[in-house]
Length: 131
Image (cartoon, rainbow, N blue to C red; front, side, top):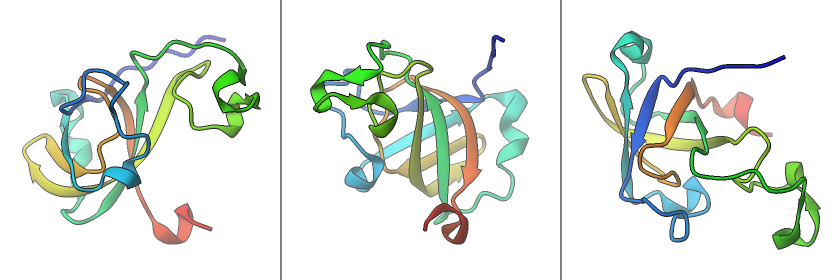
């Protein structure tokens, strides 16, 4: 089975190289980024509110799959790490919405490269998303 996905938008940040990018969104809640939603999907951001948190699912478009065992992480299995070098290259970050203008969502919590394709956005619901 092959799965094809179409991006709903793209992330804009100041990072073009993964060597200096923050490793987790929670560690970079002072830096701003923008999600630019494509026109055909912009109606889907209705009811997202400034100050709310969202879960952003994205594609690691500049990361290459390497191995199921991570040599950089004490031979850990890739699924027990948050490495971007995964068989399907899907990333997830929780970010805070600080502004909404037309089809652009400005957020805090940058840990993505500029031009990163966004696959989906979901609300972060504390009772459901934390244990």
